[in-house]
Length: 244
Image (tube, rainbow, N blue to C red; front, side):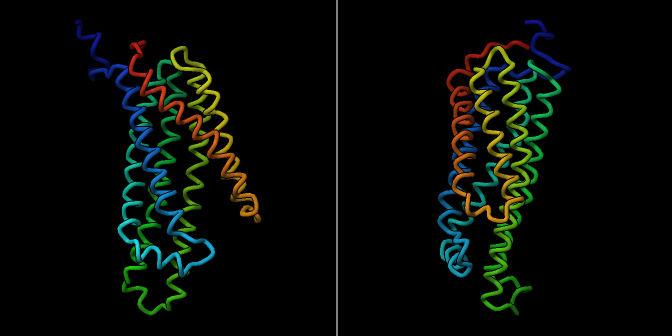
């Protein structure tokens, strides 16, 4: 095989089918870690209306809380890797837009990584940081809830960029001739869910009254679209021929 057929700008080129398979596996890991950290850990430990119970839950389930943070960190790592592999996967469609979708995912990952510092601060608060020794139990519980709320709010900012990422990603998949157009449509629908929920959360003072509705709007299209992409990449994507 000639060198120009296996090299690109002096760098060995990764076959498209391997990129697709790695991306699919990465997406699957993100699904597992996200579900575990959100629904197994935070949903079971955090009671928004009761700071004292939340603090006690985290203290009594310290290892579970730590694994939730570790799982979130693993999710960020694969989010960063997928920003690169999705760029490579969709570069043949439109290089500039594929670069844009990669950068949007990186911005979301960066903001989420910053948000995680608030969960780490919860550990410091509840483990008796010397700076907080003079505070009462109620004040400590309030600090815990502020940190958790700040984590959620910061994550919401990141999800705005993630929604934009899905919009561009869905468009590129729709325009490609080697990936199913229906997946592109589903991802573009999912992007509206993320954007709508984030904007509503910041603008509506009574957001909690409609929280379940917005959760449905986000989760259903998001899971269907991203899970469809994940399964296609793992099952069909490994059969992709290199078109670059």
